[in-house]
Structure formats: structure tokens, C-alpha cells
Amino acid sequence: QVRLVESGGGSVQAGGSLRLSCEASGNTAGFNCVGWSRQAPGKERERVASIYRHGGTRDYADSVRGRFTISQDNAKNTVYLQMNSLEPEDTARYYCAAGTWSWTSMKCQGLRSWGQGTQVTVSS
Image (cartoon, rainbow, N blue to C red; front, side, top):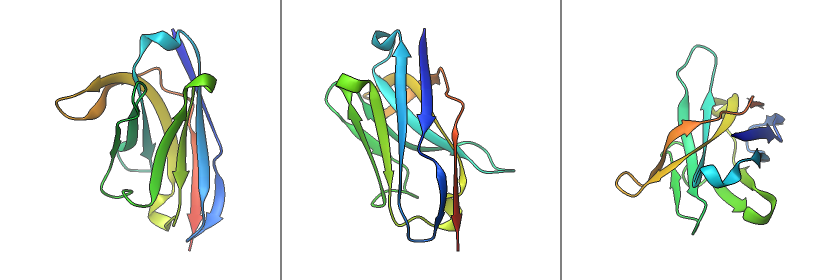
């Protein structure tokens, strides 16, 4: 079983940047992609970005494309989410999860083993 732990959240002003980390431990061979999602109070969880572990193919939500960058360091079993030009609308709790890459949808699917999340707050 894989365990994922997020870190790096915080409070920033609009236009600022944060880098989130998602570190995996345990059975890291049991998944081939990692996805980031976020959930704001009163809203449904929203996919943000995902990355295929063996080659680095990426997927982004339209709302973050061009501002957020997902990357990975496989030697450290860690996936990063660099968030630039942050907006108040990006305020949410951010979660990472392990999954199985779909070459049909070009997304990380079957997300499981969710972490506890890290809070991002962007003030105007």
C-alpha cells in the first residue's frame, strides 16, 4: 500500500507563488501516475494536474494551465506542483493521489491513496 504526504501549502497574496510537494512511501511500484486535486469549501473536488511517472506526460486543468507546473523527482518519490500567478480563486485544500495513467483520456485515473491535503490560501 502506498502512502502520500502533501506539504508546502501556506498563505500568499495574489500574484504570488507556492510549491507543493507530494512524497510517496510504501508500495511505490503500485501506481504509475500522480494527480493533484483541490477542494474549496462548499465546492466539489476539482482535478488540477497529473503526471505519468515513466516519461513525464502531463495533464492540466484549463483553470491552471500556464500558471501551474507539475514535475517529479522519481529518485525521491516526490511530485511537485509549482503554482505561479496565484489568484484568490486558487484558495483550496490541495490533495495528491496515486493512480493509473489512461492513454485514452491522457489523465491519471483511478485516484486512490489520497493524502491528508495541504491548505493554500490566496488573498487579494
